[in-house]
Image (cartoon, rainbow, N blue to C red; front, side):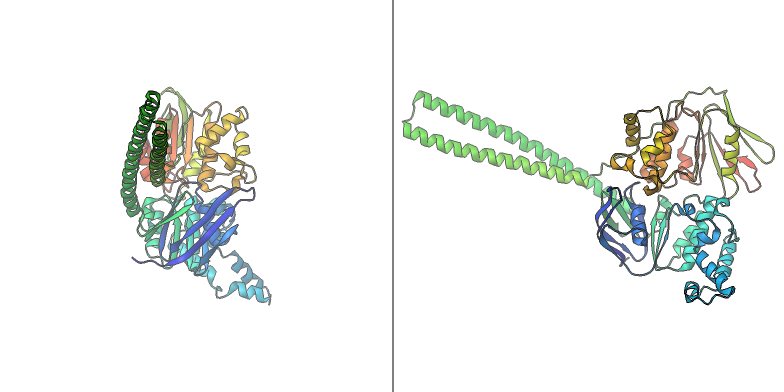
Length: 517
């Protein structure tokens, strides 16, 4: 499929107010169809989307777009208080109310445009999707999945030329994801999606990766991109091995050349000592030898330098990215120790004892988070809870945020812990509000890891939200090695299947718990 461009980036640079460079001289483009936008946490994907949407201004460079842009952030509930806010129609509703009250202000009519029936359209659309239809309902009373679907509904109906979605499947259950997949499959116009959802990424027409400050655009979905990358990396690895072998050969030749030069010099000294040749001839031969030896050294040095350059060039093509290092606290629990219980609406208790590992699933809005929080209120053992909606003080720095939960940890130890989570250098001095979703999660996780005493019960509500695929792999490894009890709420069945869970419970609409396995 031939895809033209709808977004062009020309030497785009963005620097945070504290001087930290988020993006530097980014060049590239996005197609006018459906694009999966991938990259590691903190690479700058969300920042780039905000720049394209006009929410941030470039420090340098330009962004060229082919039409109106609409943007749905991953932290959409942080600044939106009602369903109408999620739908993006609050301004139109307010203007309609002003006109109905007698206002003749032209700006009110400009705001309304042709949106006089926007409320009826939105309510009808929400009802068709089985979503709450009360436009004044607080967002805080919605599940994460409900909030996301409502917001996406608003984006679709506003009909922008270019739509940007940041992690849209976060918090969506299986049915809601199917609704979104169907919606994406029939999407018209330009769509750019940041996601770690492989199934969603495979619905895309092209894939763009942001890595090491460069954009790579590939004309295919994520699985196609991975297949291409595997071949490319195999070739790059072979090129590196060949370059390294060539460097070894050149180094050996350099040693041999030096040995020949040394032999020649010894022979020259011997000839002079034995006065085998008359002085003029000796001098002539010595000068010629010195020139020859110099040429040999120069050629050998150039060959080695060329081989080193070839190795360095080959190394840049082989991926060896830093990865999050997750090591959860060591905990040893007796299998008989009762830690918590989950209570079903029919009166049954599901007891969590010892190092039990429990998964909790269920549709959006059934009350999984409420059930977990009710359970936590009764727990007496040391517990670490990472909620679905991580609330942090946006004004505080990363270091300050973590330090207040670990007052007895030295600054050096704290920095080391943050470095394992790829929060290092200038990043730890940045305000939390400037971080990506994945970085915010790692900050919250750092507070958990530094808890003293360590938690015996670990409760995670949708932990894969905002995490890149590599970090999810690291999280799986760390959780499987954790010696304490574990409760994980997730819609990501692939993630749950990789965890060594003993029990998976499903919560129904009526609050009934049933054991799947």
